[in-house]
Image (cartoon, rainbow, N blue to C red; front, side, top):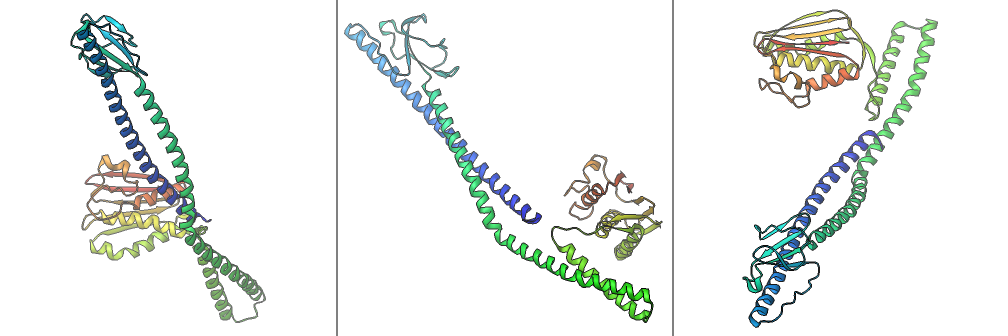
Amino acid sequence: MNNITKKSFYSFLALYLISSFIFLSLTAYWFYSSQVAMEKNNNFYKMNHIADVVSSEVIHAAMMHEKFHLKHFDRASVALIDKNKKLIIGNLVQKVDFTKDFYMDKDMFTLVSTRSAGHLGVAYIVIQSDECIKNMEKIKNKVAYVVVITAILIIIIAVFLSYIFLKPIKDKMNEIEAFVRDTTHELNTPITALMMSLSRLKAKQTYDPNILNNISISTKQLHDIYAILSYVSFDTQEAEEEINFAQIVQEQINYVNELSNKKNITIKADLQPCYLTITPTKAKMLISNLLGNAIKYSHQNGTIEIITKENFFSIQDYGIGIPKEKLHTVFQRFVRASEYSGGFGVGLNIVEEIAKEYDYIIQLESQEGIGTKITLNF
């Protein structure tokens, strides 16, 4: 599995797992909340039922002048309290707040009822129970257990689906890479032989120089084909080479000549030799992004100054500049410091990434309404 396939695999896997876990979490939370609400309602009605039973028996004993016997109720403590809030009979698990009818305190639900209407001196019937809390804990454990099992199944399914969905891409990528490897290998052999033959011919100096020149050109063309095929292999990178950065800068100035002329911008360039070891494509990306921004954010009839010398490059415009509060964000991807002109907000981010790769130092100086200067110390 190559880098692109791996990246696609892990991206799909991460997206699938994140979305599935979010859905699973929301579902588990909704189910747990509904079950807890149902348990609380059941507990409330159950405690009210106990209060009704006790109050009816108190009233019946008072009316019939019979001796009252307090029944035992499973998972609930019942106490009869007089008007002075003193215990008549029963058991209290914790202190009672008589200002509330129904409440929870320290994992214990308490219900205070006055349905006995003072018969037998009973002013309050107090029901206390921790059954609801215990049941809620059981529900939580069951939900957690189901969530864990479901999460494991989701991970297994996600990995399986990722392999299935990416298999056609993986197979096609393997075919392309195999073709590139075979082609480059086949080209490398005749190139090597041709170059060795050319060296011998040049050493003998017995052939027409024009013919040798044609052979040399053909050899370089074959070598360029070999380099291109090697580069398009997805796990390789463009080879670095020593280049004159000043020459790349001049080429890019010529390239954007029409655009600068359209805004009547004068580009003043002091281009002294500046040799770097870098991939040519990335060197072009450096100057093209910086020069493009300078033109984009310059005023009509403006000026851009470019300097290259040994291990140094600077580009300065006298355009709109960057607000002070946005200076620290301009290198972030998709962040634009101004709506003055169009763009995607990726140019300076690319410059920063290339600079980090080669340990270049970027210096940014800008004042709103005055202009911007960017310096690269290689």
